[in-house]
Amino acid sequence: MNVDFFLPWFTRLRHAASAGLLIALVALLAGSASALFLAALDWATATRLAHPWLLAGLPLAGFAVGWVYWRVGQPVEAGNNLLIDEIHDPKNTIPLRMAPLILAATVISHLFGASVGREGTAVQMGGALADQLNRLWPQDAAGRQRVLMTGISAGFASVFGTPLAGAVFALEVLAIGRLRVDALLPCLLAAMLADQVCLAWGAQHAHRALGALPALSASSLIAVLAAGALFGLAGRSFAWATHSLGRQFKTRISYPPLRPLLGGALFAVTVWALGGERFQGLGVNLIDAAFVGQLGPGEALGKWAATVWSLACGFKGGEVTPLFAIGATLGNALAALLPLPAPLLAALGLAAVFAGAANTPLACTLLAIELFGGGIGLFAALACAASYACSGHQGIYRAQRLEAPKHRPA
Image (cartoon, rainbow, N blue to C red; front, side, top):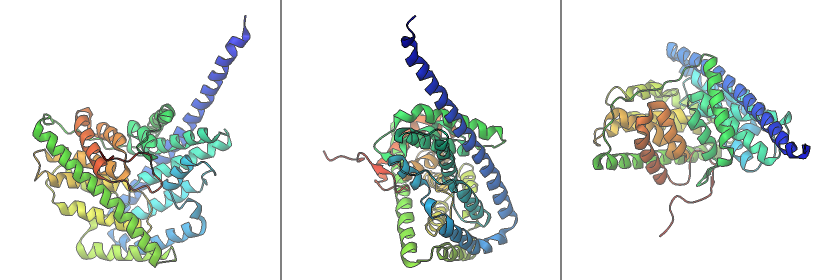
């Protein structure tokens, strides 16, 4: 018997077993962290709704979070952008402190009423926890890239209950015009397992059925493309405004803890003066409203402004769920102008505004399918593609690289 014939196969099996165990551990850590975070977020939201006066504490809460990040959190202040940078150019292990810091900071932001999301928290926890496993399984640069990507996919998938979108998001978000298909299998496995781990802990996710959808005709095709273009412009304006206002805060206020202190004070006064309590938190209330009634453009504009301000002045969380709310309410408002049902436009807006803001049309198409059913697939693909084409090259993630321009001159 030629033993040398079997040695390469044993080596491959050993590597596959090691990789499988690593993926399972990433999924276990990220899914459990997301379950803990979702439970804490539910508590914070319920407490804030039961005690509206907590908004008065937003400035001091912002100061406390800003001070902690200034003193011990500067190495992880970049958040999602730090993860993306490390995947592009692996250098240093992500500090473990990223996970507890972003978890606590996000829960505090929601408890006191800032308009922030949850995706950033889950992705940062997943990435930071996954990177710690490199200490047990030392990886080369390419291997570490894949581990970080599995952490991102596991975090995204488990916090939203969308494993397909989570896997593709990790492959697509790194660069405009390039998809990292070399990491598809580990990211898909990590996303699926993390979602199941999160569900096993008792987490629940909102998935909606849209009912009967219109036939794809010339008029509906034009309407979807027009809506997608508007969704892309909304995502583009959100990214531009958040980055621009954030730079203004940093330029004009040199002491970091003062930015959320002053920003939180103005936010609280504005909410009380204008009756804008519905714009606090994730925006799930606005998403729900977009699927059951007719809304005006003020809902989308209000959530846009509240989220841009909250993120720019330094509150932690993420952009995605507020972008869902902006997109859903904008889509609902467009039903007065376009020949499509309001629930369908709300669903398309939910996915497509995020697609434009993050430059991730494929992930957002899959997200729409997972949230609303397979029937929306073609509509979502068209809307997300149009949004992506119209959103420019600056997205919500500054570390995202440009591999290929969206438009080439003839």
